[in-house]
Each structure stands twice: as structure tokens, then as C-alpha cells.
Image (cartoon, rainbow, N blue to C red; front, side, top):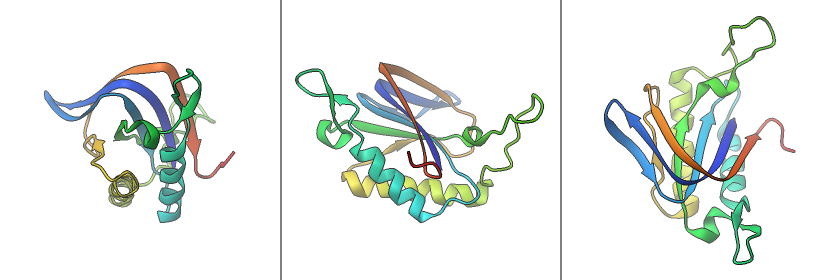
Length: 150
């Protein structure tokens, strides 16, 4: 499981002309699910995400988590995070989970975040063509991969 996490002052997802999800200050999480991902990956990534200290404290130091700030989270599925560009110029998505398996883990990821934070998590629409808008705060952008726990 791979996530691109962006600290935002606001973010939204449009499907067609309808807003599917929208947040104020918090985190935009672009989530890529791999064929070998399991519930253990979800638990680890959600714990890391909710405790990641990337928000400023009163002294302006990144020392607070989303839990501390009470910020919101917007999760958007993005299979292209598992693109392989090793050969040629056309990316291969062979490592990305198929939609039947990925949607189950995507929904489980959102439920797990809701359980950890005790509030609703905003999301895009799985498998839809989406327009994602964001105002990156900082900018702060972090990539986390459950198969490469640095």
C-alpha cells in the first residue's frame, strides 16, 4: 500500500460537476493499493498517518499530528501510484490491485481511519474519473509505502 500524504489548507474532489468530498485544513491522502496488500497494511498505515507529526505547534515547529489538530482527511484512490516505469515509456500497472479487491481494502482503510479518529473521513468515488483540487500547506508532501517501512 502506498500513500502520498499532503498537508492542505483545503482540498476537494469533483466527479462530473458534483463534489464527492471536501475538507478544510488537514490531509489529502492519495492511496494506491497493491495486489499483495492486506488488512495488516491498513492498520500500520492508518496508525502511521494519524500519528504523523507534520502540523505546526504554537512555536511553528512540525510537532503535531492530525489527532492533535482535529483536522480533516480526504482519501482518494489512485492505482497509478503503483506504476512501473522501468521498461519503455508506457507505465505498467501490473502491481496495482484489481478493482474488485482494491475497493474492499479502500473501504476498509476509510473505516479504520474513522475508527481511529472518531469522525467521518471524506473520500472520492472509487474507480471514477475525478478532479482533485488542493492547496498544499507548506508545502508538505510525504510518501509512505507499507512495503518499505523506513
